[in-house]
Image 1 (cartoon, helix red, strand yellow):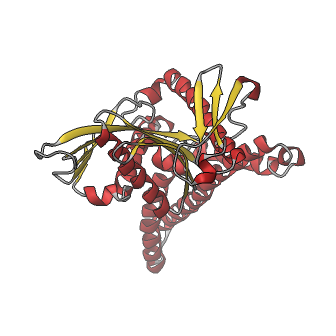
Image 2 (cartoon, one colour):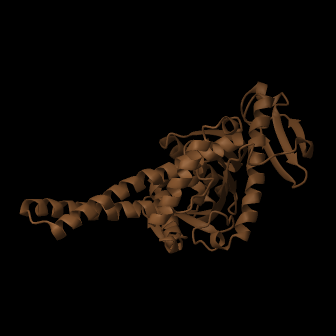
Image 3 (cartoon, helix red, strand yellow):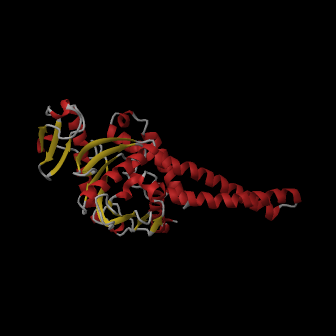
Length: 358
């Protein structure tokens, strides 16, 4: 581990010199990439400096205990020895955690797509519940969220809703929410009190930057149409809604949330870029057997990942076998426990996979 930390320090020093060079500062793509790498390495370098200081104190104390004749000095050295030993163990664990290979997309904003699945009207209502759950969680985290597009359900909720969340480390926090969410409850329209099972699919897409995916606008068909959603006369009577079709892939993205045609086009382009980026990620994941074999997968959209059982007040995440009897708080946006347990499980696996480094 010590050799690896020395290599990291050397790389950090090289990037520190590079990042202030005029030719790097003028190249936005290179500068952003290097700046992110600088910040990630700085975290490791700062902890490793504390680690080396603790090692030095440990070695000094050990030497005094072995060779010392002054009882008072030996007692002080013993205290330093024990403190340094505890500190070293703590810092070693912290360094191992920091050395887990990072997903470069963790720091990105996200585009969230929720679609009603099996269950008819009840599935649409559940999609609406999930939308409120994620937006409340986003607000609690100090993130911003804005609607991109939606299709209302016939009895409430949404057949489909797309929105973006902007903030720190959003994708790293929410990426394990992708998959099929299942709800078991008695619908309001059910007269005989029978429990129905419905489902909705959640997709968490890292929001691609312009330099992540280059879109040739000559390959994109742009259609303008009248908004069909609520918003008043000015929204519904002007051609402000925008639909973009990427002809090489057939991917479609649209936005009708804003009154401005320009703003709708901008938002639709964000969604299209993120979907194209997701296609590239899926190709990489198929090539990467390590990612494909992870128990907690962020890529399998068809996997049933979680059940919300209302009669039992229970939420179960099937990937890690976690059951929480706190459904009302969870559906009201308090998903921290689920998110943290999933991240912990994932990071524990990554630490096991990375053990050969140490």
